[in-house]
Image (cartoon, rainbow, N blue to C red; front, side, top):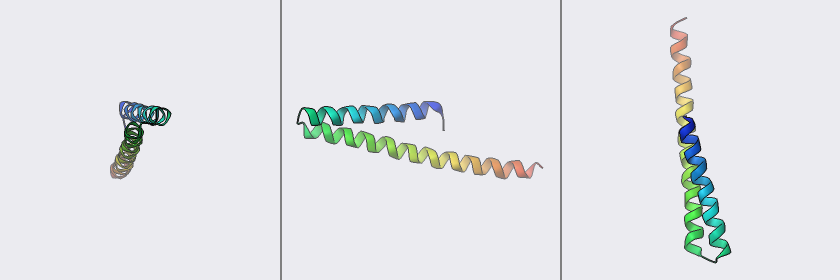
Length: 68
């Protein structure tokens, strides 16, 4: 996974945490829910990227073995 993707997901997670915290502090349930949703989206994106990384690693392992 690219560093840009990791940074983007981390930023989305932090934004979500900030929204959730601000929503709790101001008793704004909608903002709190948006924050939780942002965090959830970032977590899902991280998992998808983890799967891509694992697939790429497996592919590289398989192709490296073919050249030996």
